[in-house]
Structure formats: C-alpha cells, structure tokens
Image (cartoon, rainbow, N blue to C red; front, side, top):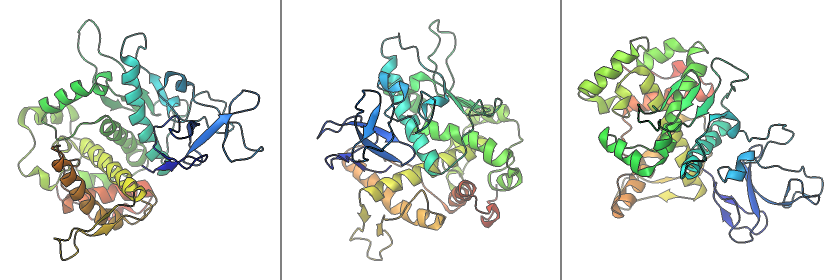
Length: 364
C-alpha cells in the first residue's frame, strides 16, 4: 500500500483516511489516478472538486456507501453508477438495524477496498454479475441465523464470495484461528484467498491453463469434499512445509492455488508499503550482506519475480523481529521454500501474462 499526501497542506495520509487531520479537507480515493484527493465542495453544492486541479476539473461524487462511513472512494468520472468500483460488487450486506453491524461492515469494507486496490493496480479482469451472470464477481456479508441453526460459511462459489460477518469480530476470528490451529487469520487474508478461487476460474479454467496449473499444484479433479474431510480428520501430511505455504494449502490443489495467490498479494502489497516508507534492511551482524536490501521499485509493475523474491525474506525477518520485540506473534509466520517460490512464480506469471512454461513444475 502506498502512502499519500494532502494536495492542500502536504500532510501524510493513509488509505482509509476520510479527512486531513491537518487542514480538515475531505478526502476521497480516485481509482483512475490511484490517488487520495483533497476535496472541497463544488460552488453549486453538488459534488466535490479536487484541490489544485483548476476550474476545468471534473466534479467528483462520493460512493453512496460513504453515508454509512464504510467507504471513502469516489465514483469514477463519467460513471452513472452511484457506487464506487469496489462497492458495486456487493450483493448482500449486513442488517444495519442490528446494533454493531455497521462497524463490522466497515471492517469488511476496509479489507475489501484494500483487495480492490491491488486488483486494480494489477489490471486484473473483474467481470460483474451483469457482465457474466453465471461467474461474475459478487460479495455477500451475511450474519449467522438468529435461530442458531447452522453458521454461515466463508467461501467461494462460481464468482460468489461469501465472508461470514462474524469474521469481522476480532474475538470471534481469533477464537476460530486457535480452534483451527492456524498461524494466521485476518479479514484481508480471507478476501485475498477467496478471490484466488475466483481467478482460478478466470485465469486458469476459462483461459485454457488447467494443464499448466495441474503440473504445478496437482490434480484439481480429485473429489473436493473427500479431500476436505480427509484434511480435517487426519491433518496435513508429514513434511508439508517443504511444499505448501500453509497446512490448509495441503487440502486440495484448489486450496493450494488460493493460498499461494493470497500470499502473492501479501508479498506485493507489503513490499509496496516498504517502498513507500523508504525502508532499508542491512543488519550489521550479517557480514556477507545476504540480508541487506533496499526497497525502491514498483512492486505491482515488477515483471521480474526474482526481484520480489529477493526482497521478501530480509523484510519479513526484520518485521518478525520487530513484532517479537513487542511481544507479538510473527507478522509473517510462513517460510518460502524453493518449491513454494515456484508456485508463487507461477501466480506471478499468470497475473502478468507471462509464459507459464517458464516456471519448472514442482513434484507432488
């Protein structure tokens, strides 16, 4: 994620900011320019004008969901849609008459908007349900039934991504993380994982890349339900960390792909944050320079996977050590082995339209 600055006063701004804390200007994220704009009301009171763009600048309008304080994005110029690029994909939102649900929805939207920030920068296709009625992207955020009969399951089904509302409750999510023996469970992680399933459909199945993906991740035609049951009954196979980025990735090739996809987005976006802050890692004790790294490249536009891969270990070692110094768990509790790196490389090439045959297959 980038850092932003106020066009009015130069104050440093962050992605979710709605007002500049220094000069008070209203802020809105512009998807066309990937900028957080400082805004002032239009003279006729209808819409907003970006500070410093001149009298010929277009009038801007906020997404309708801004009135619920869950979105700070602007509707694209010339659009007749009342919703921003991210919110127009919503289908089911929480019941806002129920106390606390608006705050839970805000947390979901913050994570979802960060997901869309990445998808837009990577220029990935995002067909809507109107464009593709049987496979277009759509989001549901339902609450569990009040009668206690079952719970909503987070997952993906032919473009429909469901994130259970309780996942936005930090206590509930931590409880589930511990019960399921996971090192890592976050809202943003859920979004990145589930959209990985969507892109398996779009970039693998529908693009004729199933054979290449099978060579990398295994045979996806095996029974998914049986594989899931086997995983929960027996756990991951011995030695799994050598070939899989998480234990859940061992469940089925679809889950391996989705977990790898999520981790690729973790890498690219976190490295962009390091670039934005001018981070450099150069521990004096590593006299061979193996952990020295400066972060000064466009991570989203990087066509060289090796550049991303070289930068990632020094950064994660540093931030994990910082977390431990604060008594916190590792920020990135995973290890990128050579086999996992090949899978990440495959996802990188898939996203950037590079030859998939350039990545050697990993034995399963």
